[in-house]
Image (cartoon, rainbow, N blue to C red; front, side):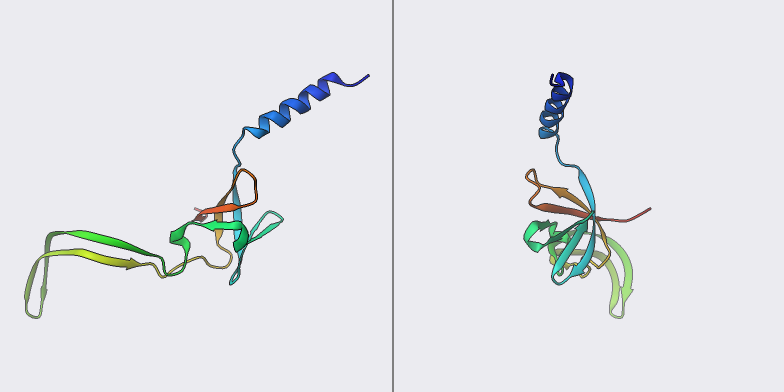
Length: 121
């Protein structure tokens, strides 16, 4: 006689896990060029990774800092306002070997998204 309860439990587990989103995993940068990330026993390369843009080398953002009052002086006079109307902000830091990363697998677990770098408090 088959174990009906065991079969029912397996069906519940199978269907329940199908609707649970993947959890966030911690990964570690093993190598930068080529990029290799290790999550548990799994090693992923750039072919299986999507990386948050701000973690990439030479990431740039446009910025505007509105004009505001300021105090200070220069060799030619005093400063009363300061502002930047349009500029590029260049980030020079990027992923480093042994960085710890928060990674999220896509539903099919074929691609992992690197969400951010995390540190221990």
